[in-house]
Amino acid sequence: MSIISTKDLDIYFERSSSKKGGPLLYIGGTGGDLRNRPNQLDSPLTEFFEVISYDQRGLGQTTKPEGNYTMQQYADDAADLLDALQIENIPVLGVSFGGMVAQELIKRHPNKVSKLILLCTSSGGKGGSSYPLHELELLDEEKKLEKLIKINDLRISDNWIENNLELFNELKINSRKRNTFKPDPENLLKQLLARKDHDAFENLRQINVPVFLMGGKYDGIAPVSNLEAMHKEIKDSELRFYEGGHLFLIQDKNAFKELIDWLLI
Image 1 (cartoon, rainbow, N blue to C red):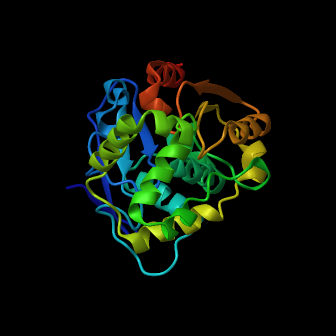
Image 2: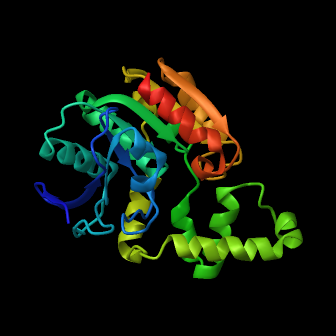
C-alpha cells in the first residue's frame, strides 16, 4: 500500500512500472477510487509511460478531512504528491473533474506541468460549466444512475431507451459493476460542491505549455462548446473530438492511440 503524508493529508497513490516515455500524472474524475478495476493503471498508457495516479481527498484510501473542500486544495494535493515523489516537472492528464483540478494545478503551480492533456472537462466561468452533478444527489439511486447514463452519452435518448430497453438495462448493470467501491455520500458531495464553483477560464491565456484537448461528440457532461471555448483561449492547444460521449476514451479506438502519439511528440 503506497501512502504519502503531506501537511494535512495521507494520499494513497499507485504507479505503473517505469517506461521510456517517462512519468505521467493521471488525475481521475468524480468519485474515483483506485480499488475499482480496470482503471487508468490498466490502460494502454502504461505500455509507454510510468502512470502515477491517486485517490483524491475524501475518496478511496486517501484520508477524508473534515470541512468543505476547494478546487485550490485539490490542486495543492496534486502538487504535494509530486513534491513527495521528488518530481519537478511532468505531463499531467486530467479527466472530467480531474481536468478541472489540472487547470487549477497549472494556475497555482505552473512549473510542475510540462504538458497538459484535458479530457471531457470544462473551464467554468465564461467558458461554460460541466453538468451540475450535485443536483443529481437529490434523486434516488435508480433515477440517478439512469440520468447519469443519459448525460454520459446524448445518443441515449428516451426514444432510444424505449426501443433498446434490454440494452439500456445492460448498461445499468455494467455501470454498477464498474463501481464496486462507492464513495461515501457526504464526501462525494464535498467534491461535487467544489466542482460547482470551478472557474479557471481567465487563466487559460496564461498557460505556456502544449495542451491537448479531447472530447466526445455526444458528451452531455462536458459539452463540445465548452472544449471549443477553451481551445480559443489556450494559445498552444490542439482540439479533437471522438465518437462517443463522456467515456469516449473507451468508446473510440483511436482516442488512446492519438493521446499516446501526442504525448510522445
